Image (cartoon, rainbow, N blue to C red; front, side, top):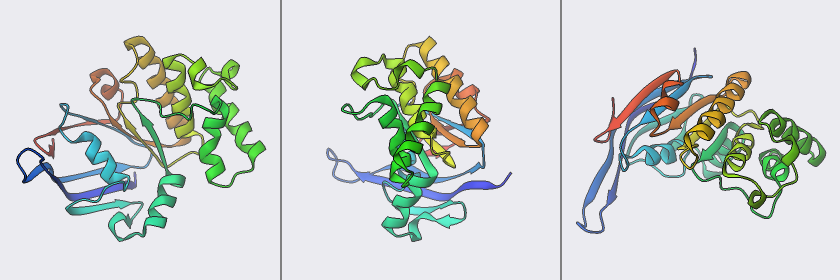
Amino acid sequence: MVDLLKVEGLSKSYIGLAVGKPISILRDVSMHLRVGESLAIMGRSGAGKSTLLHLLAGFEKPDAGEICWEGEVLGSMKETAIDRLRNQRFGFVYQFHHLIEECSAIDNVSLPLRIAAVAAHEARERAAVMLTRLGLAGRLEHRPSALSGGERQRVAVARALVHHPACVLADEPTGNLDEESAAQVFQLFRELAIESGTALLLVTHDQSLASDCDRLVVLENGKLK
């Protein structure tokens, strides 16, 4: 398979408020992700897993190292190009759904398509199809406040996948759900990602979810093992 993502020698430090000197979070991290592959990253809280995702998505800049998406070096791209990459090629799912409370489920899911200039009626049709696949056919016009936790997270998954991104970056995507709901949501998530050929980069504490991915790595002491 072709590499979708290639990372070499990635390092990141932050200035510690208490000690006033740099604290190393990531040290010489190298990794790759192939087209359509699922990769789970596990590690203790504070190990730098979320920081790694932020760097890969271009939300933060590394101190050293290189990140290449589809052969393009992230550090050489202009901010407008990085924004376009995120909008068109990435999907995001977090522990907390981050849905727009004032919008219905179908409008939340339509958002990535509308950003991509898809016509409103087509965007809603595609959003409805995705939500229906996730068992939410009867919840299309419900706002997040009227949905259960599991339903809200399914809406978030639908939003991440609706524009058929090259990769979904998922940070503890089921961490706010009970074990049964988490398993159901993640199973649907994986099935839909596989169908569309979307790669998955998953940060999780859940060994059972990680075991369902094609590969598993562990982030420890700032390095991947």
